[in-house]
Image: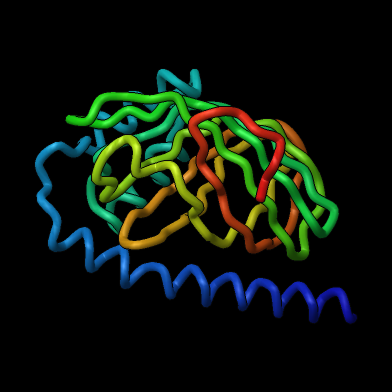
Length: 195
């Protein structure tokens, strides 16, 4: 009974934090210049090639993100691994592509805390909205992650700060269940320090 109450409380807190991030992101998107962005079809096409599958679920996630935040001006393709027993860690690496801003290799790490258990390895596509330039990715992005993976499938979260929104889309192998709060720290070089 107590675990059920704790889970519902964590889920409610996660929903509130996610909802609070949406108005700020929408405000920046509506006032931004929409040139230099990727269309939904371009993102879905790149996602299909990257994940190696043609999936209706991927298209639905990309379309949902597009309806929330508009068209991204960049995306990251990479892989990551994570695990948690209440407290979790996440590490990844990939390459950032921007429509008119070039590309750069990035690494990400982050701690999380919450009602969360399991581990996974995932191919990750991160949609990037309102990023001024490739070097602006080097910072921390707070967010909420609610996940229920059972050997594969796609999942989506949202991270935002100062109007920049990141939407990681993952297709992984493993078993993970729970809700957590944390952040991702993007760095120019790999590091084991998630803080």
